[in-house]
Length: 348
Ligand SMILES: Nc1ncnc2c1ncn2[C@@H]1O[C@H](COP(=O)(O)OP(=O)(O)O)[C@@H](O)[C@H]1O
Ligand SMILES: [Mg+2]
Image (cartoon, rainbow, N blue to C red):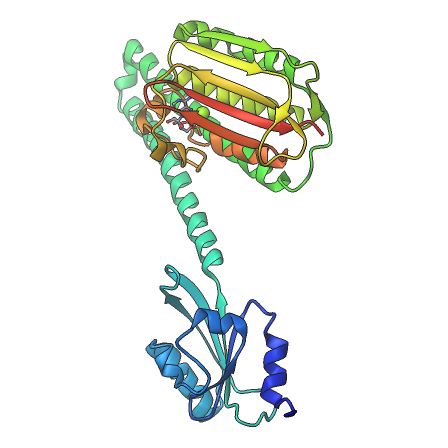
């Protein structure tokens, strides 16, 4: 039996790590690598020049600096394996003498972090954009009123009305942003209370009755669940069904039906679940929109949503609340044949 070399021992220790690690000989050949590295760079077998695997000039300069001058370097690079993945590359000489090893190179996958950063900055850009248009409108009307147009009482009251509605829009947006951040913060905390769904849905319907009447929409509720009691956060679940029912009133057709049938099994949920469905007979939602509806600020028709007082955040809030309750949001729709938004919530 041959004795394991120091390189063998080192690789055995590195093998279980998700981080891809290469050991390079002083002449830039691969002296060894762990499993993650072999998976990332199948074209860099032991004994091959590392240049064959990574043709990135900046990365090679870092390796040369380590092998030639014992310098430690960190850099970021994008590899298109599998698709545009971002890596933080770290190149350093080994901390102690290891025969045959001149550099230790690691590749840390930071794609997710980069993606989260990109989402955060897109979110800030969206919020700024959403706030800017009502603010611009307000500023414009203030200028107009100052310039003397306010002397005409009729024009003046018309301007003030528009200003009021723009201020209302900003207020709704800020309200939704605050509830989104609160819901996100609490997402890991299990709801502590218990909620009875049938009375909660009756309240939601009562709150929307006037709005439905004004829009000429028939809003009905049918509950026939013998047990409608489950762990949950009352205010949050009310917000879920208000958002879904309000959407159905706004974007649907002439009837909206909310149902709460007896508990059943739902894929992805342990044990029986209560499923509340909000069905409308509106134009429906095409599949390419349907998969994106819960993204923040995603709307099928921006100007329609704005005109109806929407912020584009309702379904994002719904998604987080449902996740906090370990439930599922399901959206079914056939273009031309209405939409059904169902929320399944575990009974226990
Ligand atoms: N029942 C529905 N039928 C058709 N489209 C809908 C329905 N519910 C939501 N949508 C679409 O999803 C978008 C996002 O909904 P939401 O997040 O509640 O934002 P908002 O209602 O403020 O626009 C809406 O703008 C609308 O385009
Ligand atoms: Mg909405």
